[in-house]
Structure formats: structure tokens, C-alpha cells
Length: 352
Image 1 (cartoon, one colour):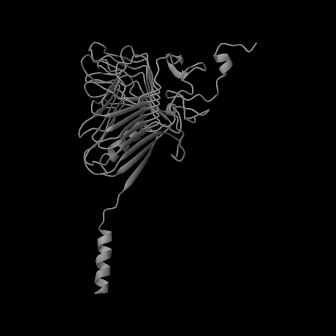
Image 2 (cartoon, helix red, strand yellow; image 1 turned 135 degrees about the vertical axis):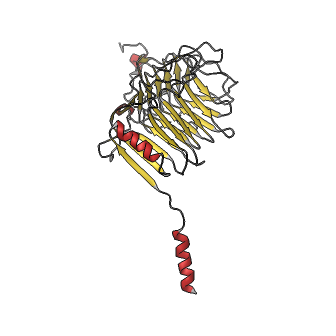
Image 3 (tube, rainbow, N blue to C red; image 1 turned 60 degrees about the vertical axis):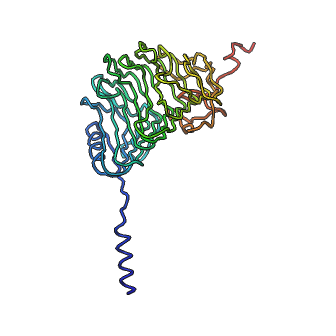
């Protein structure tokens, strides 16, 4: 009898499903798409490590991942060395390029309500949006969606009436994190916003936009509701340490009244009423190096002007891979000054 119980126990343990995970190390555009295709059909959690280099999209859908069955999450990260043993968290090292002809990336997961997506340390360049989705990145996760330390530059979505932006993220239940990114020098004249953060199902969820620079973009300002950033009307929005500047119109799309919690942001055209508890926001020229280089000059008023402990957190490194908090207080925007400015000269005194 004792042996039967033991055998039954062994059988029971053996029949419990075991969670599997797959890891891909890719170094060519073809290998990246193959990894996406394989991962989209293996029903497992997947990690796709992309080596430093430039990857050219060669089809209208760009780099395409779509999973409609199975379980598990997806982690896509750039900055890896040849053997994918060492990662340098610098977004400039790994570029996904739409060649001014194609979307750059679509990532979609369904079938597992707990599935998460992380996209980190990548540059999205020269994407083209049309009716098929956002020009640079279109991503949907059932649960947590995180995009961190990515650059979105020189993408276009100008097809009239297409409604497609440069970046469009959605989730069923959240939370959503958009942290330490630059969205700059893009043209979205076919849409009334540049970057969208949306809910595709369920009820209110949390969205955190922290330490981003969204600047020098264009979009269709014809609709009265148009604005550079679209926020889901039923999201619990927290924006901290962001620069929203020089986007040619209002900064927030207002197809419904929004009251986000806003802490220590620099906003060019503020067209919303921040929620109670908001503080530290300003309207000051960020003093970028130039319109194509969104590092801060030494005289920038955004040096040491951020919030070190916002809801949703700050990254450990900035977009260049340098330490995120220097000299005691985080800077506003995606880049952290690594050399302490000379405050005497910055204030116009020559020391004489």
C-alpha cells in the first residue's frame, strides 16, 4: 500500500505543468524575425537578446511578433555583445531601422492574462506608419507593459487621416511603464498625437511616464483635441521628471478631460489641469544642446530639478547608460548630466 501511495505521489508531481522559457541571441535582421516567429508559436516565456548593431526591416509589418495562444511573457533588449553574455544599457548601440519604408516593430501578446512585455535599450529609426499601425513601436500586453531606455527618432506617420502615431502602447489591465525614453524629431501629421498610452480592455489601470524627453515632434494640430501625448481617459496617470517641449502644439491630446498627477515636469504648452498633489512643474526652456541633440546644456534649469522617488520609479541608468542620479538629485528628462556644471559661470559671473 505504501508503494502505491508513493507511486501515486510521484505520478502527481510529474504531471504538474512545468513553466518553460526560451532565450534567443540574435545578430542579424533575419535572425531577429526568426526569433520573433519562433517565440510567437512556442507557448513559452521568451527573452530575445539583440546584439549591438543596426537591423533593417524588410517588410511592411517591420519586425513582427504576435502570440495568440500559450502562456508566458516577452523580454526584448538591445546592447548585447556577440555572445550575449554582457549587456551595455546604451540605446544608441542597437538600432532597428524601418528604412523610411516600413513600420519598425509590432509586438502583441494574447491568450495569457498575466503575460507581460518589456522593451529596453533600443533605437527605433526611420519607421513609416500608415493604416497598419504606429510607425516606430506598436505594442500590446495583457498585463504589465514596460518600455524603458529607448530612442524614437526620425519616424514618420504622415498619411492623411491614418490616425497612426509614432508610438502606441496598450494593455488590458496594466500597469504600464514608459521610463527614460526619448521621442524626438518625428513627424505624425496623419495623427492628432505622437505617442499614445491606451487601455484595450478592463477597467482603470496605472500608467507611469517618468524621465522622458518628448520634444521637437510634429503632429496634426487641426483637431481641437490634438496634443503630442494621448493618455487613456480611464488610466491613473502619473507623470514625473518629463520634458514635453517644442512639439508645435498642445502637449496633451484632450478628447476627454484629463487630470494626471504631475511632479517635476517641464511642459511647453500645458493644456490640462494637473491632479491634486501635483507639484514642482515648470515652463522653462530646457536648453537642449540643439534641436537634434536632446542632452541638456550645462546652463539648463533642469539640472538637479527632478523628483528622486516618483511613483513608478526612475531607472538605474540614463539613455546613454550612465548612472541615473548624479550629484544628489535626478535631472529632468532622459539624460543625466555626468559632470557637475560650474554654477558660478552658469549664472553669468566670471569669478573676477
